[in-house]
Image (cartoon, rainbow, N blue to C red; front, side, top):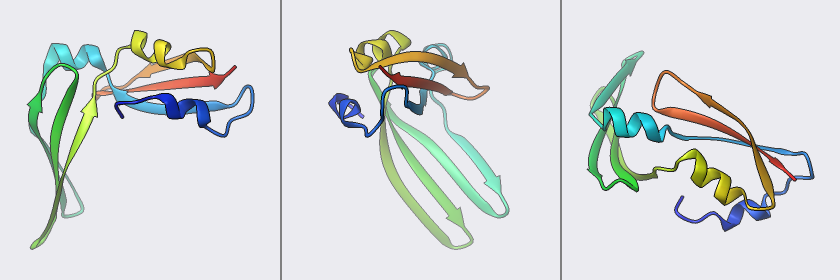
Length: 112
């Protein structure tokens, strides 16, 4: 999501949490993007990087099951922890970050 003003309109009371995941920016820079494939119960998912400019990556996501295939493109923005703190402004506080074994990184914000 390229704009973050909508965070201010989340229907959260003071002390309410907003939890989300994004790409771990450090892993992105260390490992780069490569095609990944995962298959579960005969359903195959392929994620293919199309372009990466440092601020975002465009991905083609394809899901295949038998003769059926569905594909779409997604633009995923790359943000640092400092970016997230800046987006929080006066409305939120970044209270927790959890890394994963994959490219995901989870953030928990709390309404001030």
